[in-house]
Image 1: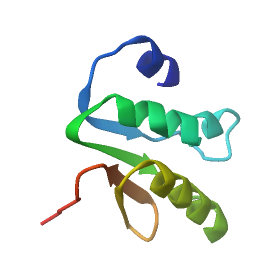
Image 2: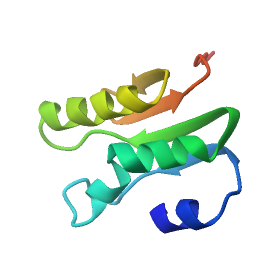
Image 3: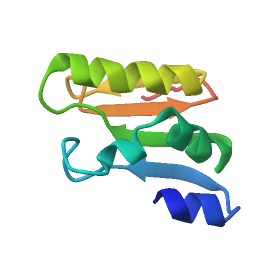
Image 4: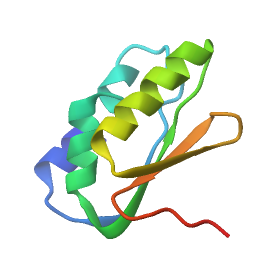
Length: 94
């Protein structure tokens, strides 16, 4: 996912990032501030990123969500912290 976004300037309405396990080797490459900024740069205006953001200890999920908040203007978390939705546009889910 990371190299595809880095090499292709295409923009998307939605980017989903869901590593199989957050503890798996390499999954941090899809959770870093640099990756999130890259994904943000590939979103169309009002585009949305959704990422898997909880596994194991609650502190781990909060660290991921804090990283998301440092990159995106808006974010919301659902399913007891499992999914985080992020965008530079306000998030309105009805």
